[in-house]
Image (spheres, rainbow, N blue to C red):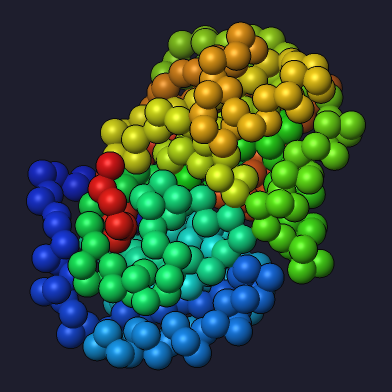
Length: 336
């Protein structure tokens, strides 16, 4: 089964020289001024200067509202043929741009190159590749970093009565994880985002959430049935501002990594929070791990399992996930 905008990659040999060969082309720079509690708006003049000092020809556009970056990426690729994009923002902005790439029909997704200047509150995707903190070093990566084909996940879910799809390059979280993401997003809107606020919501949300009974299939095999506290499925390792939810994830192996935490006591959660940051929580007896190319998650009819991808709150179960292998080019500091 193929998805719109996705073509067979064949046996592509891609490396950092690709960026050098196309340096004379214009980069589309999509800037989210609200990222990092509006830090991006304050820092954009510096980032713009660094991009120009690096000799990059750029055309920048500011996103003005939620999901606007999806429209910008889609429209600019289709109308003007941009195949090199720079995202200036956070994980949510990167997610929107990736969705725009997959919704356009002019260029093969594998022929679109994406670079990232991280100005968000979590920056979990960049953490996977040990991306530098300084803007200057991040800009330098656009011409000297590793370029490789990155897997992308597709999540299908319900929103009200409609079925919708969302692409993602990092992690989709369900259950408790989705509740915490929603609470964190509300705090972001009030200018109080960041890893610390996320951790605060992890603790406060314990008194609101109840485990949900789930049935999970991976590659058409029934792999789990029971009450689940939280569940993560994804391409990379980190979410929630540095929590290593999927410690064994490989971003170009064509597989989802899946972590489930079964129903668990509040005491066990609080005393093991630190283990989320180094991935050692997977050794707990309440934790199960799986891999798969296709995953289906369903809850009992009386309950709904809510979903977030790359920190963005979406809809609810039934949920279907499918990996699109080696689907988009990314520029990173460290190839895994």
